[in-house]
Length: 133
Image 1: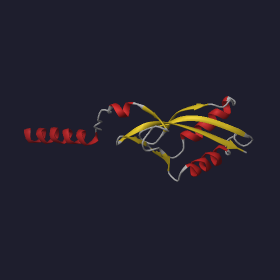
Image 2: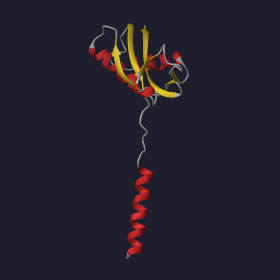
Image 3: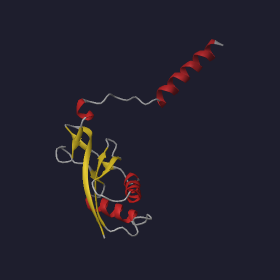
Image 4: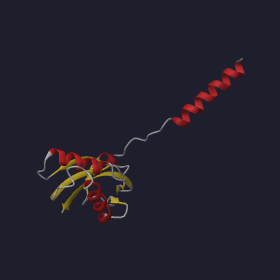
């Protein structure tokens, strides 16, 4: 009976160890939010700025508000350390439904290559303007 108990405890320990995520604390560099201009390695959408613009405009035009919208949309957002977009803020005065549709398209976009500073992945604030015609 003790062999079974020891084996069971051994199994539980290693099963738990293999499924738990060991997180390392963030360095002081990673705790800071960097501006696009000041970060050493700029975040980049796979394929570049033109590919990102094409992705956003094509998908925004598929939304209810995007079908008929024309004008400039100026935004800023954060590229997280995992490449995802977060904290979208609009600098343009547009109606709330348009903002929400545009924001949803942004949040569903493929991940970016994140910014780097002093060898660490860092959060980076990005400003972008889209001319929708």
